[in-house]
Image (cartoon, rainbow, N blue to C red; front, side, top):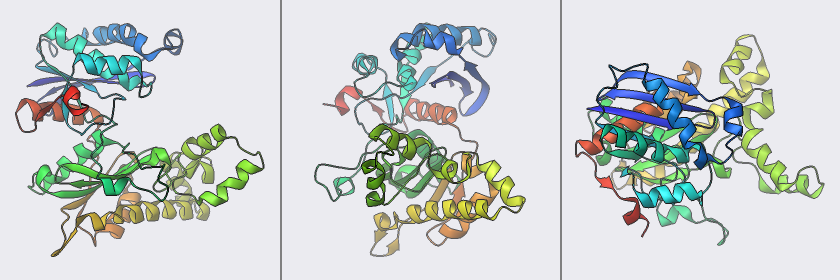
Length: 362
């Protein structure tokens, strides 16, 4: 089956065409900044992006002559279980209103539906970032008014876990995995028989520090920065989410540059790198109790994916630190486009259920 995947980002729209799980073409459209600035509301950018997609597909008439399904990146919807969803009017209304947040990913569903109508095929989204399967016990904190949220790299994590299961001859939905996505932000999930029952959510300040995010910090040590007027709440948010981590310590968010400094003898860079790997491993291992049972630890694999997983130094450090739990699988090259196509294929083949947004949010 041929699957067209559409992934809108803040300044680009990515396209990929798959024959089953084999990529036939991959295109990244860079939208001119002035064109996007002229249409500041994301929902109003659909026509601009759709035209760019048509122009890109026109360059490959032979490849795109037949499409069996179109899948778009999931947007900011109400919290819902992960999986593959048919695109429907209630979903489109929520995305157009931006009631759960405005981001370019909100265009994934309407763009997919527009092109599916032209090809005469179904349209889906897969594992949106609002995927929420957390158990009640995982939501509570020490303050009744503040609960933990499920916001994580759902598409990447689930795709990587399925690949790890395939390598071991296992079924994803029948086994348990700890999955770490290592990108500009880091999220770690406890995948129990196909459901992500707990997550470390870097967007709320949880987890290890990352190339850009501060991660866990002692809260009472932060308060004086506000009391002295060094930062206002928005400045603190910026510091924690985009100016922390590797960037705060070393002035770069590029792990490759950090490794180059280590190779040149920079001991400060070595310490920060080692601390990053240590904290990732520590937080991943913290999920071990989720899988503890009367016969010991029921865990098929620890899975590491995302951009930093391509670093042999990082991969070696995490394999060394986490192999006591289970085999550690490093999954690279399985990008979001592949995961989108895979989710659509699984639903079309009847291997996973087709979900309804309206039913899941009733």
